[in-house]
Length: 231
Image (cartoon, rainbow, N blue to C red):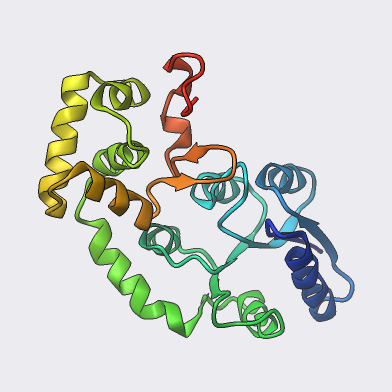
């Protein structure tokens, strides 16, 4: 039996891996720090259970989790993260993942109990997350999928012309979307819209680039001029 642990911090990944090994002494436990490496392991081995984080340097959880879900392995997926943004929680509920462990309230040792329940066929959610998940369901209904994609781009503080390039629409269409989003969210200024996108994880700044969680493959960065920081 093969298990996968994906956490961007090497020490934490190894610590979780040791806890999994205690629980399943005969299992092969693969510990990795980047999502691309995790996807390669899943392509090579029949992973029974993946314990994954939601932040990696190169690829956000909202971008790599769909790839894990679409593949035959892993058979079960547990998200272990300190992130509790509404987008991630709504994604968890929509795709009926096997577990969501709040790393803010549960230490590595208590993770064992959650994994045991998941391996027994139960769906696990940390108690601290239940009200947050209910709130996420309501919040996600405010904007359409297209508007959420546009908001992700606008969170990078781009003008309408650049937003249109990334989205594959005209500058006029990008402006129309911006106005509609601001009206729906009751946000008056562009600065407040940027803060909203950041706070709600539509836009993320990592150490080496601006990311658009969940929408990376739907946007075309190659159309941007060379030297553009978004490219």
